[in-house]
Image 1 (tube, one colour):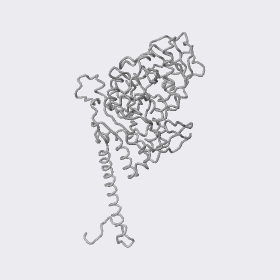
Image 2 (tube, rainbow, N blue to C red; image 1 turned 180 degrees about the vertical axis):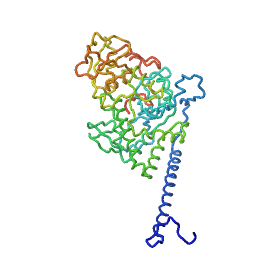
Image 3 (cartoon, rainbow, N blue to C red; image 1 turned 90 degrees about the vertical axis):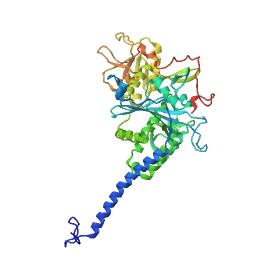
Image 4 (cartoon, rainbow, N blue to C red; image 1 turned 120 degrees about the vertical axis):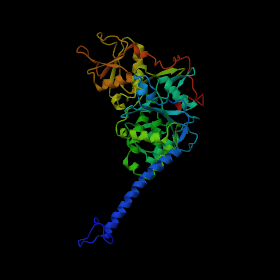
Length: 472
């Protein structure tokens, strides 16, 4: 067919081929091929740039992933589970920051954890859960009682070991994001949208934000997540951090960001250049995990905090885990599942809880504090409770229906059972649910040593022994 046109070439009305259209089709084909190559090359360049920018450190204390082939016990759930657990730390290291920035950075020297997140991928890879571990939780290390966040002063291995030994939670990988990485990533994204019901003014955190939904600058976002403003202090900050994470995920998965190759490169440099991981977490594994969880980002990722209540130790405030609720939560994650729904902050705030003391005043106070710090509306004590309620070892949530969503949220936080009200029982006035205090309300977590009395004092590994750990 030499000298003639191809049979599929476009032709004019007189039967001759149209060179312009044929040339256009050829150019379009080349451009399409180039486009594919550009996308592939971009992905590889992003991969190489991220791999070269990450800092890796040895963390010998990490949990080895289970190997089913080594198990001789078919009932061994830990071996059977393919769940993966990560400890992600937001560090307020300030060695490289600019003192002239208009951000309240504080004056704490050295490395401390500003946020501690336990991230779990379920066994079936259908769910991802984010659990905030308050840095003020009391832990026992080397015979000394201290806050969880202070263990990070001795490096990631000490923090990882503490989480594993105190709470029985496996940690397969570790990552740290620094203060500067936070600022740079939000700046590259062009800010992040955060909605506030009320003005937030907190000079200590550098926050001066108007109510409403606004695109916040990096400095505003930083002040938002660092603020402890509110009666629940550090738990208020944890909820703000979780709201920020949700908002940032929405920005990162926005199609405009994913299609903006220069911005993608800049984001990779911002993040990877300020992230430290354990040396076992290879980039190839990170990409594989990212591919597995990509579909989960469109869903509402469960985010919650360890149920806890305040206690004064040595004249300083700290937090104790509420044992029944913490045990139930840790067990959910250890078994490779996802966290039960504990509701959004708004849902918890709209749930009014009354407490029947069952003549256990100390337990009632512990539960009231735990519910308050979890964000529920506390109606307060409603007497010892009806006579027909059996006094048991286990705290019980009473509701008009066993599958009442409000009751399920309260029960999930307290690690309690739900009991449907009979015809002869009624809830106290204005209450959505009632909690009957059991003997377990004053249990300790039993995963570490005994806690000190208020006279024993509270140890710390802060670089500045005279500075209160809550100052940052």
